[in-house]
Length: 619
Image 1 (spheres, rainbow, N blue to C red):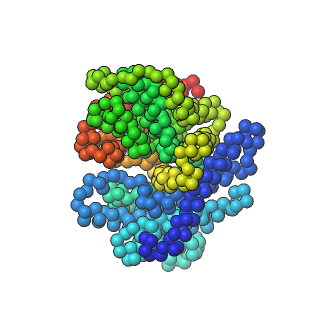
Image 2 (cartoon, rainbow, N blue to C red):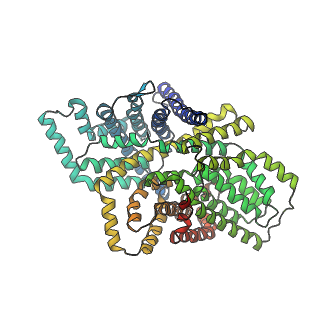
Image 3 (cartoon, rainbow, N blue to C red):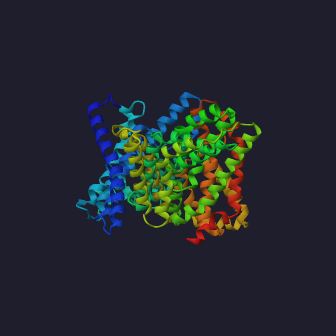
């Protein structure tokens, strides 16, 4: 890419980083300042409007950034294709497809700004200035997907031409508005008629692109465009939903907690916590198991991504378990792989936030409802670990009070963090957005200024690592919002719920079928995509069978967690194979006992609804 025009690309890269990093810093500073000002009875003028539109910039420009680093989330089946020619063919098709879809979104974004936005000031900046980021971001993503193609000099222009041709109705509106000449209007009618005829083959083709490895957000956006336009709707409806999703205050906490998680993982916080919990629990049989499970839950609750925990902490924890504590290698790898995702049920879990937003369920109730299932899962992992420790006679260490106090003091800032955040949120003192900002500022002060484990000059590298996760998630949120609108508009979920209710009368049979289906989804899709795409579709089914929305959301997240460990395509199995340098088949065998335990917990939580619904009744 740099061979084509290095100077402009280098300048674009610097501008892009400034916009991405600046947007994330802006969200953090404004939200944290609003929290402090409110404590003294004041507020920052236009803070909500600024937060919403800075989020729009962050979502779109981080999407550009993620396209640049080739880190957009995709379904993982491509790794099973061994034939290099087939892999290259798939890469060519998915790259061409992604460029075409983004080109189409760029054109419809221009039309959306022209006819769909009511001009107003955000502070002193017109909202159209923020909205201009949409065509810019999608246009740059189209070019970047195209530049990754072989023979990009030919295929990139081809992709842009196809994307432009498929945007014919949009371009007509840009030129003539709604008063096009009859001849042009007739051509638009022919375009829509062809799309109606080809609707289902096109959607099947787009789904196939997902399994070939196309970025999930482009597949979702493409399917949405096909559904809306084949029904005679306007392509701009997709951009309206994207704009609405990326100016939604409820999701601002996601990038803030993601930044917090990466600041923690890039410091030596994990090492300090390992030494702290080892000094506190190593005198108990299985004490290091307790420490390992708690540490993994802590990190995953903040990053929202179990893979980050495995990659960031897997090395040190494996050394402590298998080396210093003499646990068998197969047990250590199995425990670390399976413990990587158990923190998804604890505050400030991003999947919990997304599940609440996707189903319009009170997020505080979701957090509270997940506490008992989360504790059961943690306890189950600890019990199996302690049982193994007793069976293989792992030696214990004498308790050293001085060492325990010293290590506790060293990691006090990290240990205090979840308690401070939970207290601030559940007492109503701060909003979820403010808690996210405060956590980022707190960890920055702790790791950069106090512990000095991240140099100030190296903070930009933390942002660099966090940005692809933020970009991938926000792009999926935006496109999934549009897909949800399109599907709800067809009344498909309600019709399917009515059919399902007639075909399966028993609530418990439905729950069993739901478990099986969600385990399969967890194998193929990342949790963020699944929550935003699949959960809204099954929500009407839950209502039809009288399932509490909090209970349904927790069932969903638990199944997705276990899906990450389910052979043959569970994502955490591949990450563990990479991190520990072991063959994939061996990792599957090592994880099996823990997978069985987690499956038991899934079915327990599924069929005993009170585990999820008891505590929320008191709030």
